[in-house]
Image 1 (cartoon, rainbow, N blue to C red):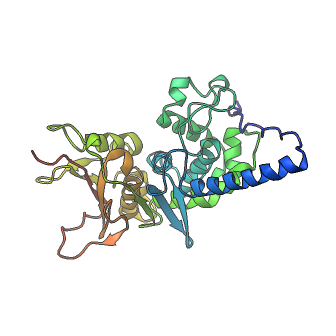
Image 2 (image 1 turned 180 degrees about the vertical axis):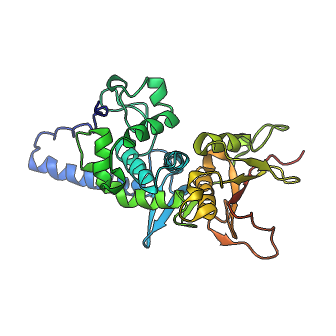
Image 3 (image 1 turned 120 degrees about the vertical axis):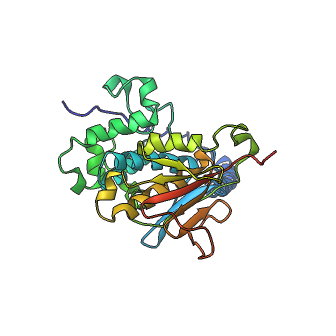
Length: 321
């Protein structure tokens, strides 16, 4: 049975009627002014809701590729799902490129005809119910379920592999997202350490957990949701700090071993930090924080770095009463 077919981009709006010369000149001036303003707004936004002050970036081959914090969170899920299923990094590139084209990596509840979700899958074409498809975990796994049936997808061009799953009406559109997707997938699978960062605002008081509750509960739940049942251990005497053991990820047995697996988890943690209230990520001898959102080398007199194959994460906690 061939993979389900999904429909894509809406047709462009029809051009307006021709105007008389004077009106056209006035209109041109107005449009130019609006366009300039639109460019300024566009330069300060990565999606409809997120200002550039909060954004994430992955760097590859000397170029930096930005995503909003919402897009980065979804890219983290898409790549983590490939990792936990033992797929190659190429699958993550294909998954991110497909979701960028279909939904801009945002879990939207609308689309052409009945297309919805990250991958714009259609209930009427057998992808699942609306409720299922709107669950990004379900929709991501549904995408990979079909990708896994495409023989030789690892060696295909991204646009060919994506089209084999999606059966889009615009089969060449996925190619434009390959460089960005490759940079993000390389970082999120641990192949490119210290190349993914996020500039995030401080966690608001309204987002902090209730007093007396486990401050790391949200993070622990997300580790399980995205990466599977990895061991997560609280650090004694350090509220909100846990250590994640990445050595059980399938990737830990491949190229790069436990160190690469740890970097995959670490950069997943940065990409999803806005959703999990993570403030600090430590892996090997490097550290990322919201206050200093770069991968800095841990000084010798600082706390001992995590053991190989593990990642130390600290979430925001309420001030003691």
